[in-house]
Length: 576
Ligand code: GLU
Image (tube, rainbow, N blue to C red; front, side):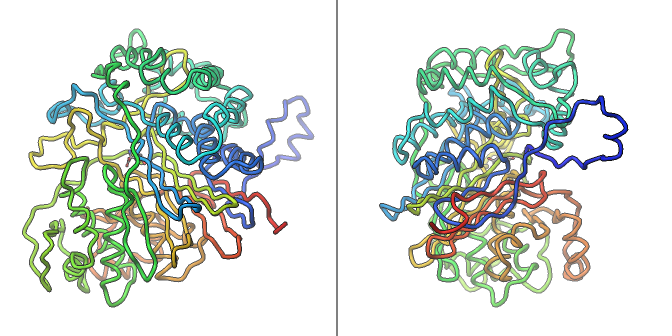
């Protein structure tokens, strides 16, 4: 997503020969098909890094980590080594799905009331919202457990891109401009991302030598350099005393992170969520993400309905979000098995009628005893604010291993604070907690707790073989984007590229369903007649996906236009 096609102003160029030619934007394509491995990311450099690792004999996990590190350079506002993420991995040798939870944690000093009363936007740009970073531990665990190359080797392509630079495209420029107001309030951030006091121009080459050096040193010293060493100390110092620009009037709350929090951090292997849907198995990310449980519950509800159209898609999603709000968080005792049971789905499906249900939908009762059609009695949790950005990639290799990987620093631009001299933005993931007061909310902050996520890297299997991998950024709209892709593909019979390109709508137990303009143009009248209300959301998600077409052929798919379009690539377009 770093590239734009600059229209060639031929006549002008002839008349004004003195102007230096802008860097030629490299090409990226949203769909690629072939053999020997495949990747889709939002960014050409990241996809190239993955393919290069695969060509050299690396596996899907090696390639995913290499591409993830490149995204930290070229997509620094959506991901980075001071962020977190979740991986869902199919190990073809073991014929088993694993997941890695690299979610940020709250410092031990954080309590359920720490965020209470703080205005959301003030929370976003603060030291207080920075969670203990999980990404490096995630990469380390992923490579040690499933990879074939070292972290040092996986970081090489990223070091190269950070030192040589990448061509600034419209999206990067616009994201910088949208952040300029807060970036200017931190000396380190202004210095890196507002050179000469303004966002880097489209077509210019952007280098991040500090980040190149940070990656190099991480390669040399290993993850402990962050989890207890010098880099960790610098992160803690930045969180506690953000480098606020002299004269800035911004109220920047300091954070609670200590070096001991970094020392205590672990990325975790977790059991995936699993539902059966139309005879296939759908695997996703378990808590602390709500991705797997909410996508899974909605699919189960759809399966329990006699027919599925857009009305049913919106209603199933509304119900699943009501249950997400009531039951899912990083707490013991999330009733995951019941939330994903067919009995519960049938009970919930019974709420879906011909007309849109009253707002808000109440949560159901996943207690294991299900009746034909009970009246829900609970009260709905308010939908918390969540930032709209992060990034997702999919990678497969020639051995049949598959990775779906969501990585993030939460808001576009994270908390806005670059660690001085290190070229990396801190995350604001802790704003994914419910700020409160909300006494029974499963997602209140707590010491060492992981904020509830919506990230939903998803793998679909048919008769034990992977058939599809998908995921997206977009805060809580991630869940509906993944769900809509699956509904488009499997209920409406669209091709995977069409399933991604199709206009989106997102119903998250809100009064109005947000939808893209093209969705409104096509479906508004018909759905309003059923009682749905809409609000415009100009762009929902930026998905990536793979479909396994059989006999080793894979189709890699990225967005044709959202966020400037993504980059799909395969190792060999033709079978060797
Ligand atoms: N913080 C979000 C989550 O974990 C991801 C970032 C985003 O897409 O907004 O659900």
